[in-house]
Image 1 (tube, helix red, strand yellow):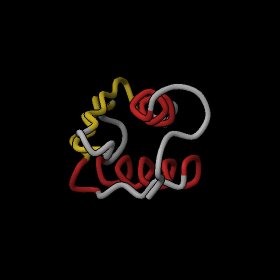
Image 2 (tube, one colour):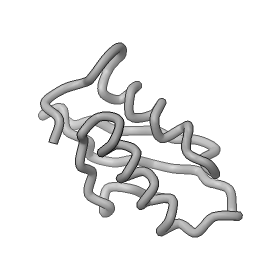
Image 3 (cartoon, one colour):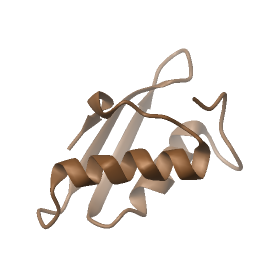
Length: 77
């Protein structure tokens, strides 16, 4: 898992920016815990994509862009 943010902005802002670019995402909010780890990711998505595919896209995007491994259980769609 990434030690800290890569590039500009807070970890929360970076993750929200990456997730916000995924097709079908209408809104995203990330909650970061005291240990600087993601606790929850709340997603509002269009109904034209399967929730499981969106979760996989979120995990893949964060891994590719930030080398950040996110447990699917922390993602709520």
